[in-house]
Structures are given as structure tokens and as C-alpha cells.
Length: 216
Image 1 (tube, rainbow, N blue to C red):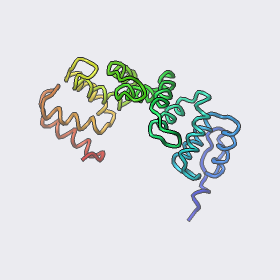
Image 2: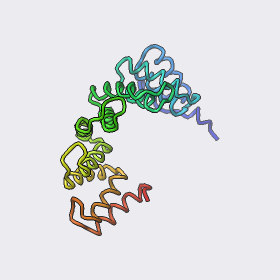
Image 3: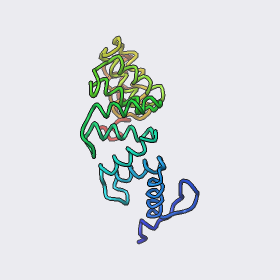
Image 4: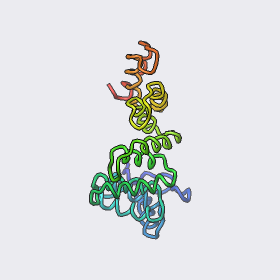
């Protein structure tokens, strides 16, 4: 059987076919020379243990270097590490600061994670109003999780005037993006007639869609 490390594939930068080990070496050299994208990729290799020993500390170190150069996704991962205490001391305040930087660059996931911080009061004073504003910004960019969270906030009246009809609008957007929880929620809404006209056929359809994605 062919060694997986010898399987060739296309190099991102130059179009030359390289082995996995050669790609790793290329990323290491570029990262050490200060390439932010290579530093981010190398950090991801340590996250997944891809041809390196899995290490949260090394992942955080390389993503910190990339973030220092303004790499948006690196800020998001640094926020995650800080929130969970992976490779760095646990700190909701530092996580919040990282998500702020990503959100300020217009990154949908950064906006979403910042909204979660405001919603849960992690690293910042709780504000449902600010949370719903940020969820809305992420939802406008098509971020499914944000659409679902907005739907649930309108259903409960948390941070906004309660509206089951508006809740369904957002949940439907998430469900159409294959968000499993949203599909289950829609099934419940059609079962109870909450925000929609009760429909047994729609109940079955949405529950089947969710089950097909493993949410049985």
C-alpha cells in the first residue's frame, strides 16, 4: 500500500505538486519567515495533529504570531483557546478581546462569537441588546448559527420584542442552511402552530431532514 505521506497534491502558492511532508516543510519555512497565512496553517496542523504531534500550546503560539499580523481567523482561534483554556490560561476577557478584533474586521464568526460573549456575560457585562445586534450582523452574512440564535431570542423575547413569526423567519433561514437544531425547531413550530400555520406534513418534512443529518 502506498505511503500516505508520499501522495502528491497541488501546492497552494506555486502550482507545483508536493508530498504532504514537503508541504509541511514549506509551511514551517514560510511561517518562520513571517508569513501570516503559513503561521495560521501551521497552527491548524497542531490543532489536528496533522503530520505533527498534536499540541494546543504550539497551535496557540503560531496563531498568536498570525494574529499579531492581523490574520482574522487566527484571532477567532485565539479567542477559543482563551475561552476554553487550551494551550493558554483560561480567560474570558482575553477571548472577548480576540473576538472583538475579528468582528471589527467584519468576520461573521467573529461577530457571532462576540454576540455569544454578550449573551452569556463572558468577559464583558451581559447585554442581550448588544448580543442581538451582533447576531444580526453575522446573520446578514449568512452565518447559520446566528440565524438560529436570533430566532430563539425572538421566540423568548430576550433582547427584543417577542415575535414567534419573526422567530420562524430566522429559524427557517438557518434550517435552509442545513442547521440541524433549526430543522428540529421548525418541526416543533409546525407541530404546535407557533408562528406558523400548523401542518403535519411540514412537521414530518423537517423532522426527517434533521434525522437525515443525524439528529434523531
